[in-house]
Length: 176
Image (cartoon, rainbow, N blue to C red; front, side, top):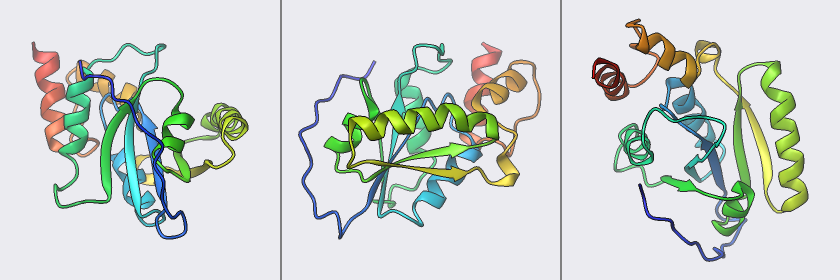
């Protein structure tokens, strides 16, 4: 498992650079996640993709595997994307990294209620960090990491729904 990192408060000129944090379990990363990252880059100068621990979910892939799968989705020359992980409160992490926003993708109305509650709590904890909701592109609205894993587990075709290297990792995971 990756070693825990400690971050000092990051001071920046918030007018000159807008940083967003995009959290998720990314178990695995899907084309829907990549769509949200790419669209976030149209709004923000930098996007920090953060793997957040969700104790309610048992991960298929180890933290290091997920970090690497995400890194492999974006060219090394893309300096506007950082990949990391967080333990503890996401909003504290975002503030310490100088982020002005937490980006959340919404697939359906059912996602909104939970995300809205989280956004309000985060706003109460740290007023400097906004939550920005982006609707998942219609092309990806029906997919989730859970559905992808279920289809892959049963030998279904997930090509085009996840990057090729993720598709291979899933095939390998379920063939073992």
